[in-house]
Length: 312
Image 1 (tube, rainbow, N blue to C red):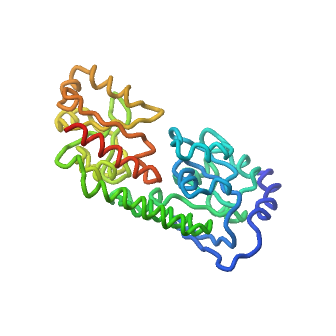
Image 2: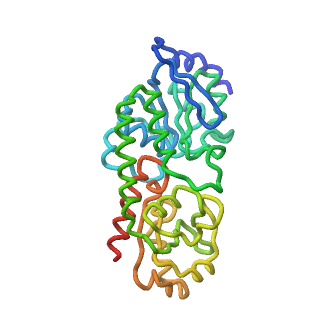
Image 3: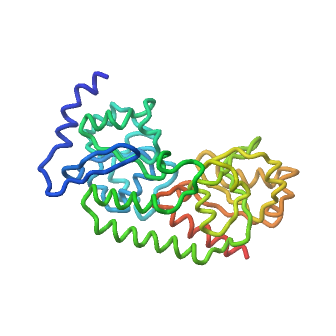
């Protein structure tokens, strides 16, 4: 890659700076990188990562962002609008290099695949630090082990350490934990079964035992009809949904499949329209970004809990 060779010295210069008293070494999904000074030219590669930075007030240290799944919440909109959007999805490595970054923060491991930006080690060799959202690291969180809220809190702590804003991170950790625990202590979905519907008509795309959406449902007290299926996301059979006849249907609002489209499909299908939840209008809606283990997870569990309480 010619541009890579041309811009390599620029990246090394961007990553260099006056040494700080306490360098920060960060472990991230099997890789390690030491930050001598807080990054000043960060790029976020997924919405999860972007919102952690914005929640910590670090937009002035960002020179780019990419790959939104849905709308940025109002409380961060002005800060987000101050950061250049480099691509609708993952930017090409050449585009990233032109920004002379010193830190790349990804929400999904796919960001560092060879089809996208290339390996973490490649960027470290250029003097560019990297961090992957903890919940997205398969080696740390296997697909057959249910997630907890610990990865969210770790992400906030690590980014706070890297950027030298530990006080902000501590406050955000305390607030996030308190909000989630408040729902855990008073779940409105206790005793109710639920079908979580992401997309698909011929075959419904739903959740398994162990991802962020499963934790959202569990935190609010719901029992997923596919909680015994390994994985974060799974294909189900409509026969399984009909047999389970869930008390509640949780519709995931996403750009690729709106909640309204899914509701209309269920209501108009001659078999699915007879489900108890459809007959009684027991639908709840959660945006996709609120099902991920990121800054909006607390919004997701509060949102879901409030809707479930209103169904009584």
